[in-house]
Every structure is written in structure tokens, then in C-alpha cells.
Length: 174
Image (cartoon, rainbow, N blue to C red; front, side):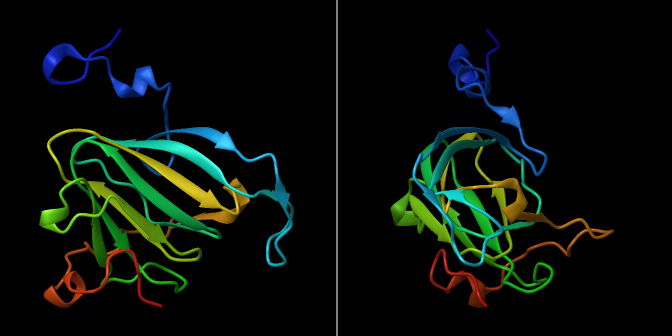
């Protein structure tokens, strides 16, 4: 079995049977609620909720994307992950706000964060070790409800200002 890091422990990617995601990171859906919803503003029925593992390795980051549904990120193990919130416009803001998902409450990290549906989001693993999280989406994830930012050229780098750092975590601007 492949190893990943100190102590020759099995790689979580292999152990948890994660697959590379097109928008970055490693993922596997672990649960989809059998109860279906038909939200008015969705194109069809959705599971009431879905749950999946997401793993980011040091320095790895995800593409900017939106989901129609709310998403809750839960930290399990590893270092901090910076979540960048790019508003709800037609493209991510060039001045995103940030919050840090992680285990160190004294350092301002949060063990869980909510990303409202329709908000642009990106995530970056800032720690020296891989980070395992769970993402809960409700109504449940469906590929038709995801938009990935694909315009030519990158969105300018997300370097938060002091004002952004003082905003409540997990609440992106409108």
C-alpha cells in the first residue's frame, strides 16, 4: 500500500478510496439521503442531503466554484485550510473574504464552516500535512448545480486585507 508522509502510514487517498476531483483535491461521496426533495428553484429532485470526504494535500487548492445548495465543511484531521469566499456575482470577487477551517480554535480556526448556496468558494491547504474534511450539502449535491469558474486567465490572487480578516468566519459578502 502506498505511504504518504512521516510514520509510513497508509495514504488517506488510498485508504478512503478517494478520487481526484476536476476542481482540485480528492473526494468520495459517502452518503446520499434516500429522502428526495423537489425544491422550487432546482431543475429536478435532489437528495435531501449528501456527505463526502474531501482531502487537500499541502499547497493544493481548488478552483473557484459555486453550488446551488448550502455546504458545510467539517475538519477531521490535518492542518488548516483557508476557505476563500468570492461573493455571489457572475464571477468570483477579486477581493475575497477568508475563514480558516482547522483544529486550532485559539488561532481563530473553526472546526466547521458554512458556505451559502450561490456563493463562490475556493479552498487552499495551508498546513504542512494533508487535511481531511467532510462536506455536507443540502439539498444534496448534483453535478448540474455546480458552476466552475472557467474564464481565461486566473482570478487575481486572493490576498485578504485586514478588514477581510475581521469579518465573521463562514459568511461571504453578498
